Amino acid sequence: MSLLARIGASAQPALPAPPAGPAREAGEFVQGSSRPRGRKRKRMDREKEEEVLVPLEKQPLHTPWLKGLAVSENTSKEQRLHDEIVAFASYILPTQHEIRARDSLVSGIRSVLTRRFRNGTVNVYGSVSTNLCLPTGDIDLVVETPEIETAKEKGDALFQIRNMLSRAGLVSSIFVNTRPRVPVINMVSSANTGALHVDITINGADGVQAIDIIKGHLARMPALRTLILVLKALLEQHALHSAATSGLSSYALTSMVISMLQTNPMQRAAEVLEQPLESKSFGTLLLDFLKYYADDFPYETSCISVPSGGLVSKESKGWDDAAHAYKLAIECLVHPENDIAKATGKIRAVRELFRESRSALENADMEATKHNLLGTVLRLPQETIDYRERLRRLGTTSENRAPRAQDTSYGSQGTSYYGPRETSYRRSQPYHQDQDSRYPRARHALPPRPASSYSGPYPKRPRT
Image (tube, rainbow, N blue to C red):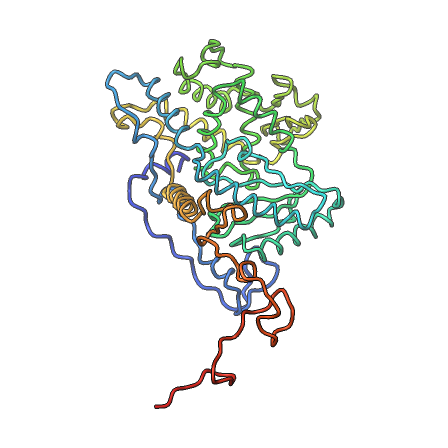
C-alpha cells in the first residue's frame, strides 16, 4: 500500500481496534524485555500491552480548516490550493488556551527543578519556543547547570528529576531513556495539566542557541512558517516526523525549508518568495519543495548549509559514505561540524512521501475532491481535534476558577479569595488584666468566660 493510500478511506467511520493477539503463558519471553514475564505484572505493563494503535487508514480523518473557507466557481486550482494552505496554517497555529496550558506546565516543572539545581536554569527550546509546534507536539526542556558534567551524573540526575516530578503530581507517565546519545526524560503530564508530552535533557542542547537564528529567518522569510507547519503535519500523519524513530526531525525540516528559500532552485520570481500572500504562491512553493527534495536534490554529493546560504560537498565535510550515499546531510545552525540529519534513516520513505504528495496534488481535480485539494494528502485524525477541545475546556475551567484581580490584594483592602476578612478579636479588643484575674497576661488571651452556675467540663444536659 502506498503512503497516501492510507488516508483514502478516511471518510468511513472508525473501526474497532484489532485484537491484541494470543495470550502468553507465564514465564514466556517477551520481545524487547530482558527477562521472562511472570504472572504478576504491574498495572502499567498491562495497560501498555492492552493499548493497540489504530492504523491510520482506519481512523476518521478530517479537514476542519475548510469550514470558514468560501468556495468560488471562478477560482483557479493554484489559487484554491494557496487558500487552503493559508487556512490550514491559520487553523493549526497554537490557540491561547494551548499556549497558556504549556506555559503553566513549564512554570510548574521549572519551580520543581530549580529546587534541585540551585545554580541552573530550565529553558524551553524546539518548536514550542518558535511557535512552530503542532497541537500534539512535544515540549522540549533543557536543564543547564554547571553541577553536572559526566554521563553518569546526567543519568543519576535524570532519575532524580523523574522522582521529583512524580512526587509533585505533575506526571501521568514518565520514563528515563538513557540509550540515546543524549539521555532524555519522556513524560506525559497529568490530566489536570493537559496531558502534554514533555522531553527533558541536561546540558548541551544546541536548540536553545538556535532559537534566535530560526526567529531571524522567520522574520525575513514570510513563507517559512506556513510551509513548515504544512510539511510537519504531513510527516506526522505518516509517522515520519521524529528522529527517535529514524524520521525527519523538526530541526532538520526547518533547515530544509530555509535552504530551499535561500537557493530558490526553481528560479521563481522574487515576489513569489518575498510576498507569498499577495502573489498567492503558497501552493507553488509547496509543490516546489516536494519536487526538489523528492527528485532534484543531490543527496549523494551535497549537504545543506544554511549558515553559508547554499550547499556544500559531503567530501569537504568528511561525511561522504559510499555505502550510505543516499542519506541526507544537514549542517547544524549553531555548530556546523555536526550533522543534524544523521539519524534520519528513513529518508527514502520521506522522499517517497514527498513524491506521492506532489503527484496527488498536481493530479487532483477540484470537482472530484469537492474543492478540497489539500485534503487529498493531508488530514487530521479525530484524536487531534479531541485533544484541542480538551485543552480548550481545561483553559475555560481554569479561567472560571481563577480569582478576580480585585480579590487578590489581601493586605490593603481587607479582602480574601473567600470574601471580606473580619478583623481579629485581639486587635479590636485588646486584653486588660483587670477584666478577669483568672487569665494570665498574654497577647493571645481569650475573652472572659460568661457567667454560669455550671462549671463542669461538658455542657449541662437538661433533665427529661
